[in-house]
Image 1 (cartoon, rainbow, N blue to C red):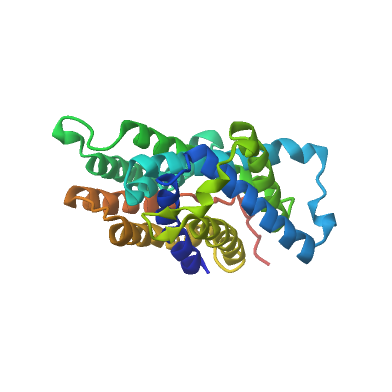
Image 2 (cartoon, rainbow, N blue to C red):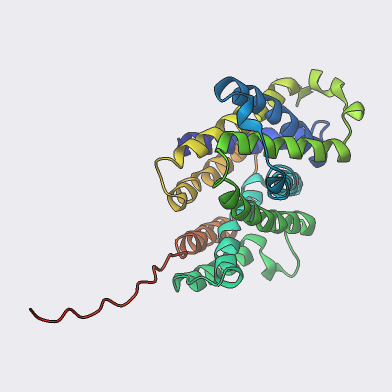
Length: 303
């Protein structure tokens, strides 16, 4: 399930970039995605669980709003900004540093113990980012705006995971995701009102070949609804750490699709930096630990 989600997510990077090059900007594409996903998930929730599943308590609203704004609106929008200015694979690399920020939050925000490998992973991430950006040439070879968008996207994605881990404890994943996309759709409609949406662009073709409406449909169904449900279902069989590490196959597949379909070729230094960065992320991803505090066992007197 994780590999299937990674495959559909990976192709979605190229699909999203084509949409961004043919009439959509990042806020509009985020609004379109959130609204379409919300409507699809709303139908699924009502069909599978009924309207009772969508009931929400007033105390839940702040967490739901934060969860929806960060994970379903701001993260996708900043990712779209990043890949509109960077190669798809590089944009994903920046987003994939989110586990490092999660591990740092666990250590310094929640004051929980982490394994020493976190610090080695952090060093490798910095080295990998230096290679990816090729700063030694005297100036950045990549767009500074794209780099900033990718890093802020990673920080917000980490916040989304932290909020999600708390919210999923009180709600089922399907209704939680539906609410989150609904909140994102409302936020998007404020930024890019629907009455200003250029519906005529859906009838055009990307590069004179692929219909825009077909790309938009892929974005909603195979780039959003199906992979989100697959990832949610996979967590019933795998721990989150395994899901995160296996999900990194998305980066390799996304770079491959972008190379084949968009002619995006990475330099040798960027490829090496990407591998180093992923190793660092894996170390950080596996650095979180739960230390059970056990009371000392009293000595039993001999009988």
